[in-house]
Image (cartoon, rainbow, N blue to C red; front, side, top):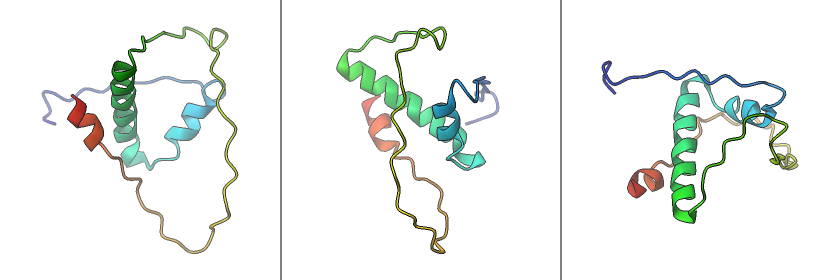
Length: 97
């Protein structure tokens, strides 16, 4: 991406109301958060096009019927494993465009 095509979009959110988004974003290293958001948006766009779903803007948390699912119980894998950056599979998204 060259400097003349680069753009920055600030995404304000509430850590309490948008707790699911906050936790998801913080699961990525700082250097990969923008990649994760771009991938999630492209995935949503592709999925909504293929299903014919129309986008419904939720203007406040009181309008939302979305309830995040409870966190799955994970095994304790606290052995000395090296943390790796999450791999984002963008091939499915870029092929559909």
